[in-house]
Amino acid sequence: MQLNNTIAAVVTGGASGLGEATARALAARGAKVAIFDLQKDKGEAVAAEIGGVFCEVNVTSDESVDAGFAKARAAHGQERVLVCCAGTGNAVKTASRSREDGSIKHFPLEAFNWLIQINLVGTFRCVAKSAAGMLSVDPIDGERGAIVMTASVAAEDGQIGQAAYSASKGGVVGMTLPIARDLMGEGIRVNTILPGIFNTPLMNGAPPQVKDALAASVPFPKRLGDPAEYAHLALTMVENGYFNGEDVRLDGAIRMAPR
Image (tube, rainbow, N blue to C red):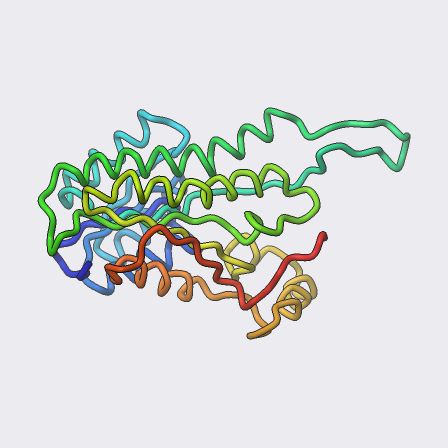
């Protein structure tokens, strides 16, 4: 798909981190970008800088996502590109014993479900609704649209405490090929990126020694990933018409240790 000023794009989680880098990269290619996020001030600022539109969206809500797409399409027309970066994480052991008093507890099921609803169901909600919209437009050079989802290396080698996070991201990987097959007759491609350790706002809150240790754990290059590198791969997946049904690690060859 050739990116230019006739192409509308939606980026979920586009107010910061990987999503912001992708929104900026799409806009730099001329695409009309809508940002879906809950960070209103940051999202509006980024949208203003790139000439896009901000939509305050909670990906766990049908009504919120529908309203976001309605606003984005009113401003730019039907999107032909969707990049899903909205997500979050937590770290809780499946079951554990307190060192203080020996009491035993398990992962709160509401916390497990909360993460699944955001990372997995929220991603699918946006994909399904965007794909339905893409079916309403005529193909350009045989294509109606391109979708990029975001998983994590934790989908394949999750660490201690990442049962919920790994399950949510593993679900994104697992649904990539079936969705691509669902949409193959409609000219819509679907791919997924599995980022490793990236220098995002969440990571920026870590102490320097922690960031240095994480960077040293990457085989090569020995540094954290740059969000622009994620955006570069996302645009490649959009622009390369033979890229379909794939899940690709972007991680400097790291394989996560148990902790």
